[in-house]
Length: 382
Image: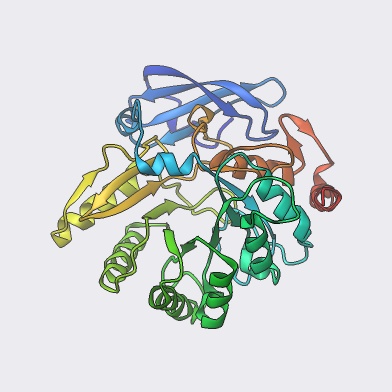
């Protein structure tokens, strides 16, 4: 049974909705039910034929869950996301963020250069985002970017616009920025967090990196993201957003997101409604305008707002326990688990299950050897 059952067993079910979910042990897809309960929260209930019944909170405010979805979203953000596929190009990283949903491992050998290029050129979307862990750990990254976009490349498939998702630390070196400009990089997305999130000095490097990108007018900034654990972290994120605006560093959007269950989760899970409320409260406290985006591709795990004229996405990273997979049919897409493509959010969850030795209810390897199994399979797929 889910860990929250002792708290919720006496609550009354007010309304139910059909859903699909995953067994939190074996990652098997299951029929599920969303229940709005008298304590004000929404829960997912499901039963695995092998591992039994479980229930978990999906949102602390069921009315927020009910009101979150747009019926026919067709905004620019949705259109862009549906034309992009993320590919992981390395397990290595030069920092260890405590809530990283990848869980870096610097001992795992990278996929070959040829594999990455061929994979990128084979996806059906017009754009591809190279992710990790940290893609700039690869010394061949400029060559990879160039070949993915080169119409005369020796590699089969079609050209793609290339984005990388990075911590931007290496962009502190202006010569590295110029190297990626020459390679034809179109866009970067980056995680900024706050000064206390990393060891001392990381934020200074990122500030320098952002200045280099701005001053060289190098390439577009797609998204700047912040992982938050509490209202104070959201205040820090708003401070950064306002500072970046003052520095004329303008991304396509910002993302303020909860930590994922993958990695090192916080004690109490933070839901979309709570981050939304904190942003709204901070805006009111500071005399800033705030409103919900009417066409931002909103779903219960993803709600867009305007803070002044700044586009901010508020995101809850659900995990295997409380993901409602009926909302996992939107972009950006990803291909993290071999021979599969799907929603980035769901691919992150399924990849974590695969690394633990599970695939859709099947045990791929004994629990004690799942990491070695994952590494062996990954190396075979090169």
